[in-house]
Length: 121
Image (cartoon, rainbow, N blue to C red; front, side):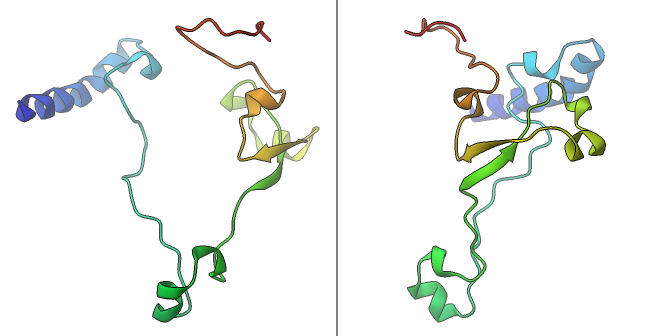
């Protein structure tokens, strides 16, 4: 049973270039679960010494930097619009990170198979 799954995944990956050439967009391929993704890995937080690594929380490492906070945000309609000049100019707005940009006033949320209890934005 396991070998069939492996075979089907392998054959699906082999068909990917053919489906793309046939005009099928990658986001419409239900068997494709990742594309251009790095393999999974463990998080490494360095410490000055082994003793510090064993006794101190990760936030106390001198090389730990939490990315939470307020970031500058600008939304583009298409990836092709993100050029160096477009990034350098224009209005950027603050956005909370971590956060969902669609509920912070940018774009509209997309839901499927569920009638949401609030009107479309």
